[in-house]
Amino acid sequence: MQDNSNGLAIAKRAKEDRYQGHDYYLVDELLSQDHLLAREAVRAWVKQEVTPIIEAYADKAQCPTHLFKGLAEIGAFGPSLPVEYGGGGMDEIAYGVIMQELERGDSGVRSMASVQGSLVMYPIYKYGSEEQRRKYLPKLGSGEFIGCFGLTEPDHGSNPGGMVTHIKDDGDAYILNGAKMWITNSPVADIAIVWAKDEQGIVRGLIVEKDMKGFSAPEIKGKWSLRASITGELVFEDVRVPKSHVLPNIQGLKGPLSCLSKARYGIAWGAIGAALDCYDSALRYSQERIQFGKPIGQFQLIQKKLAEMITEITKAQLLVWRLGVLANEGRATPAQISMAKRNNVMMALEVAREARQIHGGMGITNEYPVMRHMMNLETVLTYEGTHDIHLLITGMDVTGLNAFV
Image (cartoon, rainbow, N blue to C red; front, top):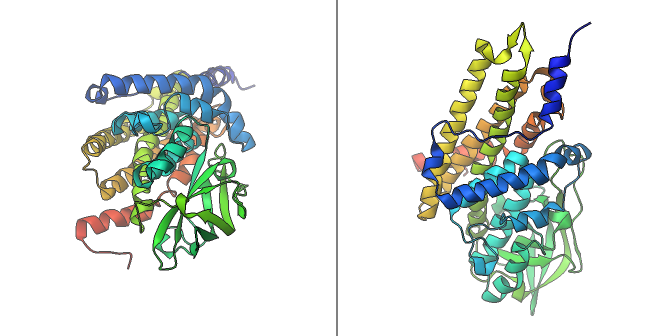
């Protein structure tokens, strides 16, 4: 009979969150004390509130919506927005390290936070009226309100300019018709930031409340990825939206695209968290799993995998640190953010795949976080700009030639 005692003992320990950060190039020395304190607080919260439940929620394809309040309490909603508007008053690197720790727990949990902060609070703060800021931002920052962001449509994903959702002037309001697809948080959202074309074909942003007649947000079922994140549609059938709900300080696609840059920046940091969790689990497994009388980490091919994993993670850490410095200085370009998002998500997905191999058969079970991260990252590779679209953004930036037309 085969002796599985070593593997079973390791699997039992795997249920404990023994994660430790990995910083091969001492990048932490480039962070401030505030950054480190924020990271430790979020890491502790993830260990206490996310890790013990996330596998069960992912298995059931249910969103742990009770975590919204906790995310608010740890300052994960709009960390780099002003305190007076419900944010954390921190800088962009703090925002990044918070997203990294959240995605170490689960990409869906990071999505809950980054949508709320970057795609809902940010456009209201940046493009809204003072009345809109005062009305919505404190409630969004505290988690009293949940928001979502409506740009992608059933037939218009990578080409947002082709949107058909539209508004028609009706005196003191606009009549909104259309639909949005693949919207994180939509079935549980109190408000939606919706982008639609007016009668002149100009893209406008609107704050749509869930109780407005004709507005519905059905959930999308059957996902094999981001199973602990709730995703849905936004459907508008002659929804009457008061003109006071229009974001007054932006017109055109620049509005939604600037919000996406803010969110993509967070993803570039967040994906490293998923990679670190996979690497941490694989490294520990390689030191504890005995085959042929010795730990599998002693074999050359396992060391090759681990060495390549930490090398790519380290490169990604340096990339986002520099991007964060540029963001703090107001110099980070959308193209630079695209490069970081594309590189780091693919890096994380490749790390997850290698980690799965190191875990052997156990890697496909929910005893370890690797397969869940791998499935999640397949979606992160696509949303908020697909892997290939970001490649073309870089190509256009370096050549000056537009491949999209």
